[in-house]
Length: 288
Image (cartoon, rainbow, N blue to C red):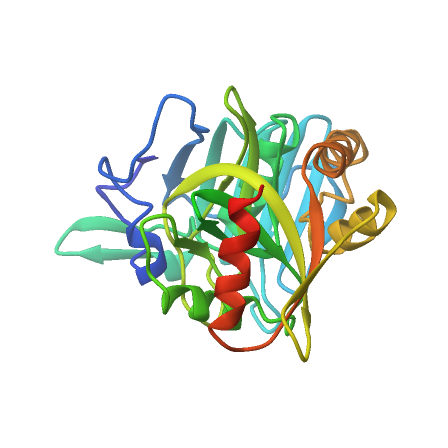
């Protein structure tokens, strides 16, 4: 990441620290996005740009291959920042609003806005054509196998990951309790932790081969039920972070979802909030 100001000040949220710097475990196989921060005035979106996607606080607009992501929460007169890139975001320019820029003893400092939601949106674009997805799911290495625990808010992801943390073992390691990244690499489908934790605050810069997807369900006993492909797809789509407003990229992302359904065994995991559930998981993973 480069900066047109004198100094770039990184995002210092605790969950991000393990993902920053030369010691974060990056490899040549990792995605590389070149992000340029500038203290120049946040420009108006390009003439003729059409809004294609939005949330309560951000908007994505496009004109040809050019994309603009603008953060403007309700009640803010001016955008907080605006990010511009062409097609796949290999190089992104982020225009930082006044709230991210300060003059300290004659030096202009830019506080990096490259955190949620900007980094997740950029990663979604970058993964779309590179066989990958962000999932609203927890993840862990269980008995040395990568297991994803999918579910909407309240499904029990953070609860289960807290239980995993209470049962440390050489083959057990939590990756995340709320968002994971799945990618196709030379050694197969891989699952990685992310810097976007849930209530348990788990965000590990680790990855391993993906061996199973478990859809969580609160239950009165700990049990696993194998799922049919149609059940898997019905559970997967609501937790996949998809660019619904980008038809060409959406086709690629849905194709990757289909690959997950075909290649990775999936189960419904009814569990109780006790350590016995971790024992059940370990026994299950050893048989994968």
